[in-house]
Image (tube, rainbow, N blue to C red):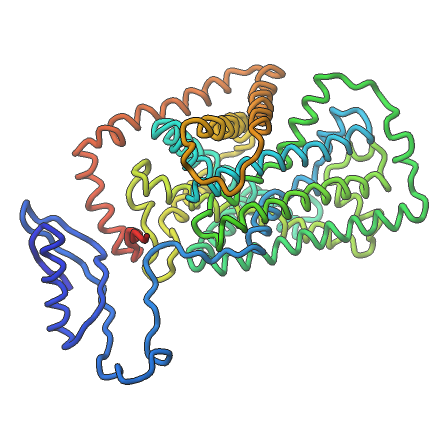
Amino acid sequence: MVIHGDSRWKKIKPQISSKVSSLFGGPATFTVLVCIPKNKYRYSFCVIFMYQDTTMEDRSTSETTHPVKATVLHKEVGLLSAVCLIVGTMIGSGIFISPKAVLLYSGGVGPCLLIWTACGVLAMLGALCYAELGTMIPKSGGEYSYLMEAFGPPVAYLYSWTTVMVSKPSALSIITLSFAEYASAPFFPECSPPVIVTKGLATAAIVFIVTINCFSVKLASYVQNIFTGAKLLIIFIIVGGGIVLLAQGKTENLSNAFVGKSVTAGGIGLAFYNGLWAYDGWSQLNYITEELKNPFRNLPLAILIGIPLVAVCYVMINIAYFTVMTSNELLSSAAVAVTFGDKVLYPMSWIVPLFVVFSTFGSANGSCFTAGRLAYVSGREGHMVEILSFISLRRFTPSPALMFNGFLAILYVIPADINILINYFSFAQWFFYGLTMSALIVMRFTRKELNRPVKVPIIIAALMVLISCYLVLAPIVDNPELEYLYCAIFILSGLLLYYPFVHLKVEWARKLMRPITMHLQLLLEVVPPEKCE
């Protein structure tokens, strides 16, 4: 139904209410789906009605009235789902396939295990800084929201530009490609799966995951919980096998653990670099702060549960590997967990690649879940196209943002190899981590009035800034290449879009996007989020 009216909403709303009441013969609630400007004084509105039968008013309230949900993202993520999101996104396929970079650079079993433990401690310290930021600024979007508060829109825009357009979708494509390789491997026992098969399966996985996340927040949380449980199960199986072997006296590779080749300061630095990348993902919960139940309690509590759990899993699984493999065998293995399974779990060794598939699928689901929220918040602040800030009228999910992230991920699946792209843009992630830690320090002085339910010592934030600086510079100093400059230029090129389209809000761009936004609204059945106090 299309209703014409005065251009000012305060005059239009009574007109619509009156026409709705006369149409249905009684009161009805309504939502304006699309506002179409006809000219300076007239607009057309596409309205969705919800009619309430007044003849039923004599029934008890508990039987007849159902609260109408506001069109916002609802708080549906509890503590268990929050922990599973952290654990599920941190533990991908790397710890099962190639956890050997830390061993390679540390020089021995003992230093390797110490570095895995130390990296877990550092990840915990960084996550505690994010717990302060998340409870101080309870907005979704992670680093984007904190950089906005501390440094203003330009810095926040550069973060969203880099992360929404490159980092998040390319990471999703890499994870789904890993999933596709291991899922298709049993059907091609004599050779590697054809590229067309892995890329097609990865694309299908992206579509399926995006569909799940668009359909329901609860369903996406259930999927995350199930697949996180699956990856923890295989870790417990591997660790259990290692404990049994240790009890049987298989300690040769752990004896004299600190005897080996000499360790250099540069080698230790590179070992920490690779170890901290394995722990990356500790900030994922901050992307969905607005959807957390009781975020002031569950955000820090999920961090205190999830990250130590991941650290214990990483250390224990490495100990299990060393019970059956020497350092040289581990370094030469193409898939460490599979090698462990062949030696310890035979004839049930097939469960290891199966659970690696589960692990990668769960990581992809978690990555999609959080990436959609970043695009949604960026659109809400006017830093991305407006349609990304809309949510499904029926499902209460940020479906346009989720679809956009999935579309970009599919585009990144098409090229021959995007691992190079990921490697060159990886330094940018730690640059923004360091900038976010700096934001915490800055707001201690500029935003003293903000409530801080969690408050970490400022020295921890300063330490994380120094570590971030090292992790930004280490790969560049170790292997300086021109591609790093290209990445920096790409990040800064966002300012060329920010100034005309965000700062100046040029009128021709708004006129161009208005009909596109309108038709996408009608197609996807999405609306702007309501402002709730």
